[in-house]
Image 1 (cartoon, rainbow, N blue to C red):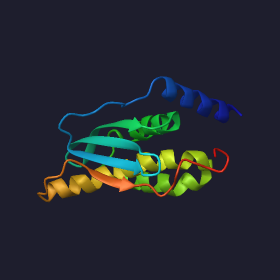
Image 2 (tube, rainbow, N blue to C red):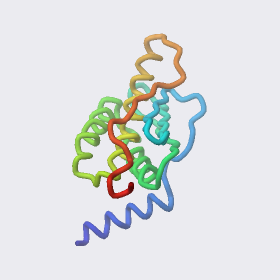
Image 3 (cartoon, rainbow, N blue to C red):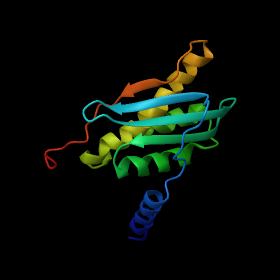
Image 4 (tube, rainbow, N blue to C red):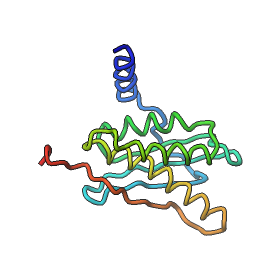
Length: 147
């Protein structure tokens, strides 16, 4: 029960004081995760030192679950390598099956925004001039309970 209380306290702390909620001017990469069903979206900005994530921030048009998820997710990746970040994002998406259906899209938008930033980074490093890259999520925020 103590673990559940700790998680609840962490959630509330991230809700009241989101980490890394900002835009980076001239980022090394920018990715967007988008829900076309309701136009919610998450933008992730990366500032790198070689292949290490020196700074990662996000902006969102979405619900509080999206903001909290973005805060927790970006906090986890500061100082990690790009490869580690990619593994975390893919594992994060795979574990969304354990999340309540109404919150899956929120988590997927955050993780896909990060993966889109990695695509954008690869494009930029190969010489392509591209402001950002967008990935569309597969989940939707609406459920039968909400209709």
